[in-house]
Image 1 (cartoon, helix red, strand yellow):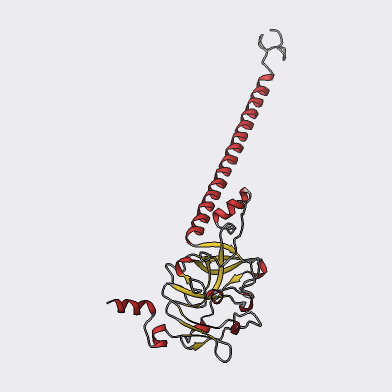
Image 2 (cartoon, one colour; image 1 turned 90 degrees about the horizontal axis):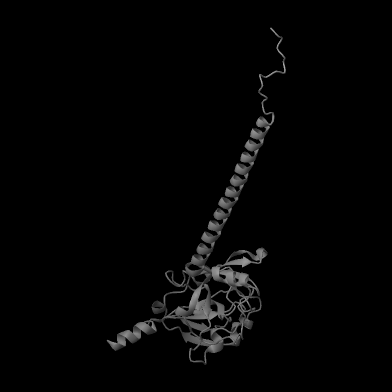
Length: 277
């Protein structure tokens, strides 16, 4: 018997490249799987981001429409409570369903023409339009004012007593907590009874505020419709060093009685109703 040749394979030579091809094929398949997995992960991540952004936009729009809206302060009439270029958020739940109270700082539409025409304002770029749409930027095309509520419907508001103080329903007010230093109430005296559905508003910077006092000779008599009120200013949002809540200083008005008990007479609207019966 011949000695076996260790190199003799009985006429069959295995393909040495077979295992290598299979290895390459496996590696290619795994690479494709990793790439597909990576693409799927990226698409999934992008879908999640798009969903979050869409939900955030919808929530911002709903908040702007029903809860809060942004406004900016263009003048000095409410200093030092509010300064020029302050950005504020306004609570849209006031005056409905929550009622106004004396001392509230309110933003209202200028449907009485207290402000000069603001000219033509461009719509701004797409990003500004987007921020306005979701309520994070004020709408510069609309005219609004911001003042503090001093008198509500039926209130008898007088300026001034011997100490230069405003009185509401016979009670003099100590307005020092919010008045700008040097404010002089006596420069424009008045004696008014606020009709129902109206408010009497004044700026905290009394020497530089064209408020209800300045418009007594007009058809409105200086009164603002409650329906014109957009909401109650609640938060200073910008600049960050002024971030904080706005108070209505209830202690200033705590001693003010209801209109009927103060004057001994019925509020105007109720008196007219009784006269017609």
